[in-house]
Length: 310
Length: 319
Image (cartoon, rainbow over the protein chains, first blue to last red):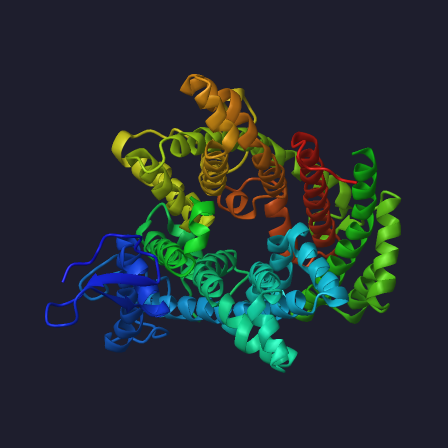
């Protein structure tokens, strides 16, 4: 059975029929999910990134569970370099840095995922309402979004983080409040694009109400861009969270995050650079994997944007 | 165009008012100068009262905002309690100058590099060098500023000395004793900023250049027999720079707004470090002064970006 060469992205793929079936060509349709997967599979780097990310995630949970030390446990050996006992060494009060680093990965990843979920929900709701209802609501919400564009939000984030950003949930909420506008703009654009199309008109003629049209007919069209944006957001969130924690304006010890581990070790960089490089390196690796994954997903889920992006 | 400019400038004024008011509210509710006194056992009640009087903490926030605004308009930004009560205005302007010393060379380096990398990878789309440049920009986007800055410090403080017994650059502070000192103390922070900002800018330049290269007038230019060089540099490059001007204005505002992380790591006495220190000191007037100063810079550069775009691209008509 040989596939005919054609445009691989077309929903219908023509295949030569097996000999025992009818003469001629059979048209095999591929589901949307199948097409997406076929496109995604071609992105070797994105697959690799996904695998690395998966391994990292598993190890973030497995290592602390398997380690003989707790992440807040204080051992008598402080400020030690790497050894068999403590492969990453210990910190200034004798906590094992391997278990702290992996536990920090857990916290940082969870915070980033929470940011992505909160941001996506908030952004999608605002964007959908703004795009669908239009009029005064739309112009008000658009003004709010524009305000976020012109105000130096990272600076404002620093100012408010000192009060609300010291725990994982708090910092996640702050970051979501900072980041929601990009998803809102994307969703608003997609909704505007679809709401005048015939299938929406047909649904309305069939008696569907606004909410049903929005939920059943328009929102599903926004899933592609939303998934891509949400993925990339995890990377942005992990960088922002570690940056705030690095400035001691984010999550505070003893709760470890990758950023505050770097902060705790930065004073010893001339004697013990490895303590900075390991947690910092994890941030880079996670963000890099997520960016590659997001790039692959964009090509897979949203093939129409490829021409513009390239 | 004149009408548009006037209108655009006028609409910036309410924007500035709304933005500064919101920032005032956020700063006021999240920074309480009394919180440091609460931790202090030996301080007495009168210290609280002095702070309350100084910042008028007993009045509602909108009232305080208008009080603050009228003072600022009159040239009084308050005093920085955490720096020997010197006027906020003086310290902010002094630090802004230091930030500019770092931001201006960084800006030109970034802008030049972004154009070169963007054009090169667009002209050689899908070549090996395009993929290498793309890979680097992915790395730049994924690299938190603090990590790259610390990495440079580790290399030049620790390893370089071990290997070559040399200390080529200052790793902290601003040294102005001689021009060589200045360059030496600027190098690492500027390299940090460059990597962080150039990643996004060169991607943008590449996309813009590709869009132009694939447009009809470029095909026309090629069809009438112009050389590749003329087509790229005289026709394509100039047009693809138009959208980049906006990005330049915004990135310059970002650099001028104090690159908090870079300044912190390299102990650069600029606006970013000032902001972080004032937050930790809960020095209300100083936090307000720095935040507002940065906000005004960013909003004004947004305005400049918008206006420049209209000037440079005659296809855009405002009526």
